[in-house]
Figure 1 (cartoon, rainbow, N blue to C red):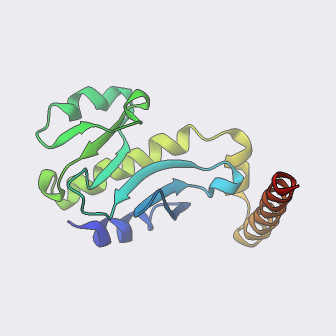
Figure 2: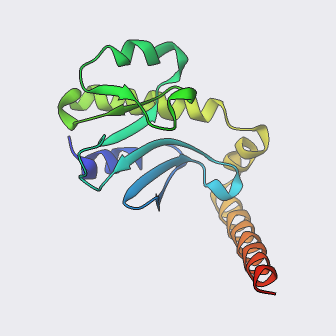
Figure 3: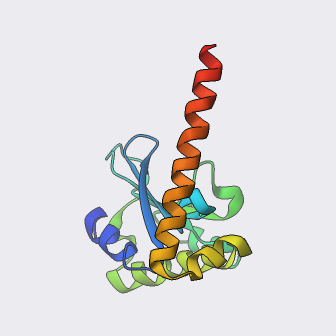
Length: 150
């Protein structure tokens, strides 16, 4: 397994969206963050010797996963039961798919009702709402930036 194959798999999950954040990190969300989506996985593309991927493990699975060689508490995210995997060889492909599907399902279950309602909309209506929301957020950011300069 590698970053590109993991990316391809994650994007097949329902309502999965990716962003590039915090340097060279692919962040995967259940639902777009503009409508209240939540992160469920983060792939480190830096090759800086740190974990290759971090994901939501949940309280039930967290301790069990930490007993596996090559899995450690995720920096900054361990308090919400995320794990960090140090190398791709820790799991075989079916195990990766199982772990990341579970992270996606766990995160989807925690979405607020309003966000779930948006995700349940027909695709065209959801895209229109998302575009309007992003436009509104961009306008707010521009106004805040202008206010700071004044």
